Amino acid sequence: MSRNNSDELFHFEENQIQLLSPQELVSQITAEIEFYQRQIVILQQQLGATNG
Image 1 (cartoon, one colour):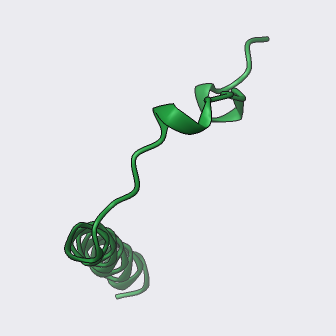
Image 2 (cartoon, rainbow, N blue to C red):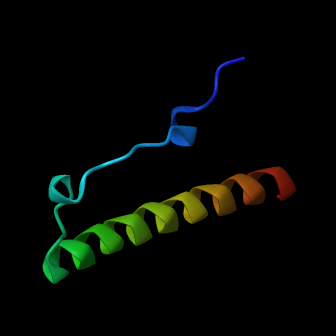
Image 3 (cartoon, helix red, strand yellow):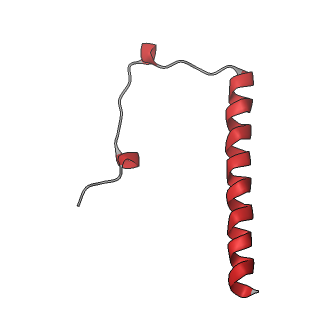
């Protein structure tokens, strides 16, 4: 059985890593929060459909 790609380990040299600016960090975090909020709504709707 093959392993999930998320289990792969990557090694980078320090000069290969680029830090995000504060604005880029906020943008990425906000996008992730919005994604998970949408997932929560979908799951709540599914729960309501099965329990309703």
